[in-house]
Image (cartoon, rainbow, N blue to C red; front, side, top):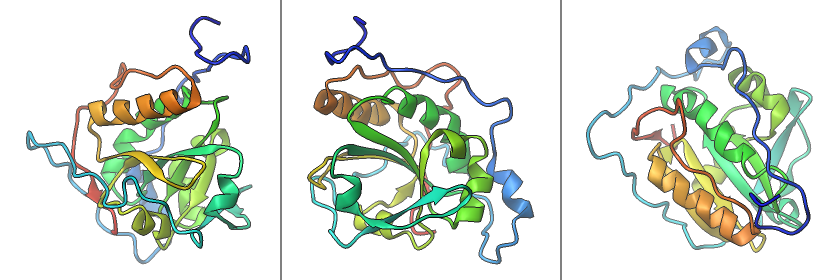
Length: 220
């Protein structure tokens, strides 16, 4: 396939959007006392968030990522075990905000471009298993999902705004990251993944993607 830069012969794939994408508003039915008020987008012209403070640094070896398995929290494993074979391309989402809801469909489109590459595409949600599954809806079945209710990954990566797009290499180093929804910055992360993985990147924004906006506070 000429659209690929790798030589293994498989092409990247793209899925269609769900019939009914989930929205943060739907979380109002969740029985969680800490569910905070929905955020309002920053519509000012400055939509470029600062770079994460840990960009270019190695994540702590003691950081544990817990997967969502059959709608429940699975067995957590240290970050370097998840990176033993593949890099990690993570979209980090806060399900209790509008900002992460608005970007979900676009994030799925970007991640799907790298399915089959040498990076594990995943959605990392700052919530427990129940809330993560409710927020993601059909996407929970399409992607590897990590639950980070204590925001340990968020803190370790030095993130200040969500949503975020984070590329972690197999050596544990955060090689590229974008915060909030600034399409050129997300495209730069996609380009970094493509370069490392010998893959084809993807233009951002795409059809139907939202306009740029600042993210919500990463620590809630």
